[in-house]
Length: 376
Image 1: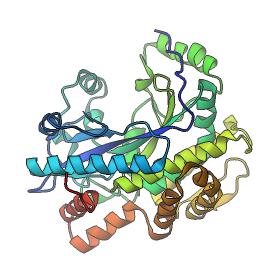
Image 2: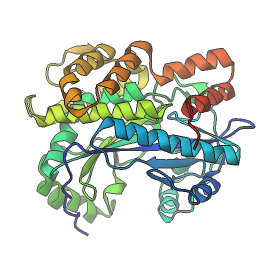
Image 3: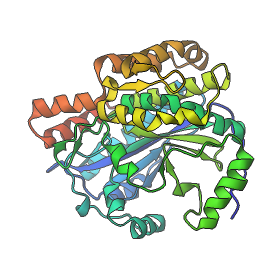
């Protein structure tokens, strides 16, 4: 079927999706508790939305659509409190983090949802290995051409979001050496990576998508696992490179940072995106995933070598007028502190050293997600 028309959204509206870990409190391994948790949550009002994910030890939460940072943060805190209260009744833990540090993929159960069963049939063991946890951020776009412009102009900033959200240093009980090992699992899928360089929606829909559909490889936009992808039914672009942070405060701050950058880009004062910007894309992405804030990236226009932490801090300063206009200065202050003090990946490694075990590290992540919980 032809790709649906790009729905017009209010520019710069935003929303957040978070994939979360469900953890047994007896051994701190993942536990297939999503059916019970979702059943319990259906019995009480839930701010936002909660859905199953590909394996039963995961859930995904979705915020409402927002224009301002503070209400988004308030909603994410309310969602968190509701989840924690429900998890206490089931005697399980809920945690952020891009990977569970010692779960074994072979022990995971594929969720009953037909699409997940189809993905399991198609991708085999990769489907269970996809028990990794990410944050997605949607940004509203007035029309499809703006969406594609932002999608490609944002390629310069992808390493920022990887490094600032990185929270997956451990895999199968071993320190992977990566700050975001999660991205290696995503890269295993054949339709991952970057979107094709197309700047006009009609060309994207009527030429590129139409050709891909005729190949029989894809049926909808859901079949693309790109780092950034358009979502025409929502009228958004969707950022998909972030690990799930350990706190909803970090998740809200990352969304606000993306909103500010998009406001800056839509002023079109920077040089427009071109195909050659992607010459450095994969290497910059690797630097951010491997070394996090200590990575060194290459500017796609000038080829200057930039310490990633310094580039993030300089960009946060540059975005301050946009944050002032959008009401999100507090979010940028939060991220500046994270850039200076260290990411969630660094925090998890520190917890491993202090706790002496992966189980202790998971317990610390559970407590960090809970925060100073209000009664609900």
